[in-house]
Length: 468
Image (cartoon, rainbow, N blue to C red; front, side):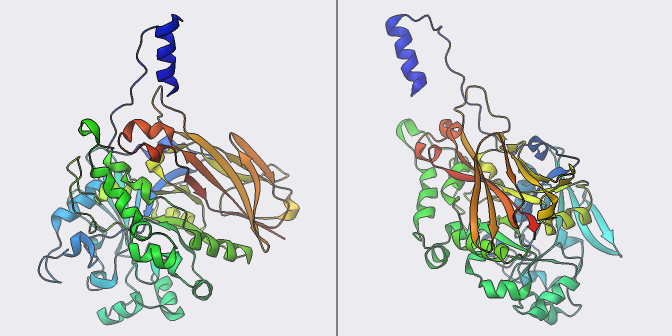
């Protein structure tokens, strides 16, 4: 609006403004930026990870038909190729697969569960596959780990929890502490998906390491939205479909941005996180992609199905901060420790985002660290910028808020932009949320400009814990 008004003024009162057209937005990229665009900090490398993802070894993946007409036949290679290509295009560094017990439990532990194909590189431990490197045509590579999602969601498994197929099914489908202990004994880090539907007393009993603060499936499933989130059941799906409806002059909004209506704050998950943090518990959080490529097979204007793996994988990321991103054990330990943050990268990659604590002796404490109130620490947060923002773009409106959760609930400590700092001399869990109004996306939202004026959560960190 302001650019158009200035042009009118220049023409009408001869202000001598020059005749150059404003810069145009570049063509939308179907690939994500490398995770290096976020920037290293203090020797820790942000490692883009997907935690909660289904392959053809889930019975309901690939349009519910991952093995053709039988439950034991070869997997759908086309669907697998879509998954592998999607991981490469989204430049995922670590993919934590979480397949359902059918058909994961029916398969012997082996390279196939890690999506291994010729040209990949397996990493083994104690004679068993631990991870697989997918080598991408664009020069990227993806570390693939195996896990399972049923009621419990163990990630980074090192083996099946049993050599017996029937017992494996029972354990993967288990909901009690025996199942949780068996999954941990198999090397799994115990996570939980769909936190909105889980009872907080059960989360305590399971002693989970982490859970989802957001899930794409929950954001669009009518039943979950209405029953657990108190939202209009059909609204998100209806709004996403609008990205395939042409406007005047047959213009379309960028179909990748259909994820914008799916971005929301999962209040029940936040409430449970706050409650458990207030009790002094350590709970790490992630965003769950939960992609199956089974929900929206209709091709959009770009010729790609609406729920393609590539499209879903770039909506939300988990950046694990690790000194050696090539080490499966280092990545696993950092995730379990809460040394990570969530970024909704459909809005852009958050360059320079940082949160850490500094004690009175200038000692640095990263996300997931525990300090004492006697350490005289401060929590410092750096507001991120959009990496690779094109020249002439409308500047997105970005705001950072620092919170503390204690036994009295959640309190806001500071709000602003740039560098923020708060004293960490009261016990509690300190974390930050960064919000954005993405005006820079307006050129790509030709028929649906309203999404460039909404305010979204862009980044949410895990916590730094200050103890009495």
